[in-house]
Image (tube, rainbow, N blue to C red):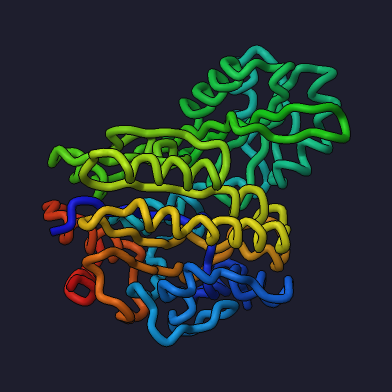
Length: 390
């Protein structure tokens, strides 16, 4: 009997363009494969040993003769390629209508209402890379005290502010005001606080980011698990992505290594249900910044910690390594990329070397977990439990 499942999201680690990727402006994208090609190869021996390189069509990681886990990949049904859409599908929701985006900036009436409510003017109001717009407008922000408002190809309204100019509490209050405005016809997936520190020419974003998300539009695997009395533990930005819905306990993390450390700590505790971890650095620090070498190093750093994670698993635990979208650092622009996600499953009760094939939805992961943990859940997806359990 399985009592606990870990969903381990390697944020943005896509493994190749989906058949409809061209509809999203993504041709030839392959986050993992292109990183390997651009950096002289990537060494992920622990994930490789579990079966990552055995996934059909994967590039950058070679197959092994006797993988220790089960493996496959999944297509995305939802209309989008961002964090919210990907995570919601991972727990059983298909987002058919794309969430609102603002590639040309936010409407004047929204900005005017926001400025009136916060009692300040704003800077920016355009789609931009977060680090670039801070570099561009940081000095003016310090001089005026005006927050920097920007967006991206994702459904987001982001507010950047220097922690010494606009204190965190005030920045968070601004985000709550923006959340109230960006509802209904203007609803975006997330309002994001983007605090930074440093001096002109040497700004850096801090770990005090905070996301203010929409509630998922339906009940997810997490909600059903919580109603059944199971622990649903969110590590990293999971709590933010679901606006707290379906979460029984949460901890925010400083970086990938902290996320891994917290996962290990929770594995050592006496909990039962779901541990849901997101490692965001791949996406935020390297994918969006188009830093292939940094992305490679972060992946290898994570892989080196995999033995510690597996050692912390109990006899009745399962871990699923996966992703939520792609973010090919070798591709044009700074945005996410529409890709297959990997699925690698390991545990004492998991059959070795089983190929679960190409799944038609990320939600197959949710349906499988629901069946394994005996959670009655009216969610999307098709279970592959029968393929993987001994």
